[in-house]
Length: 87
Image (tube, rainbow, N blue to C red; front, side):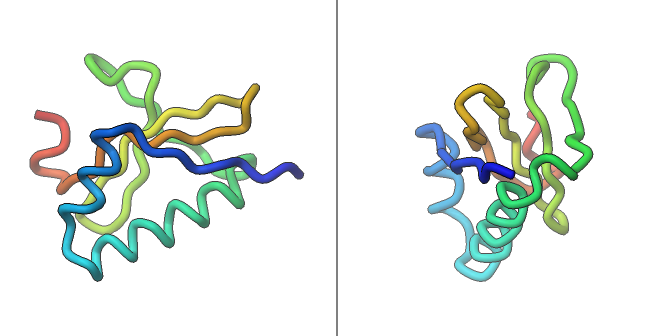
């Protein structure tokens, strides 16, 4: 199986940099797991203004991402606490 590449939008990169180091590392580890297992994971699709994107749960945090199966790229758009991420 071909492994996917991980990419960050400008906002996604900024969100990751603003997180506590320990939380940021947990999220980054989960993202590495995601790109290694993209074909066997049930991706949770979002609705509304995030239609076409997916969410990844990491404890109380959420990662909003998109998948480009043609280019084999997962792009992270936003990372935040579940109480704030969808606002």
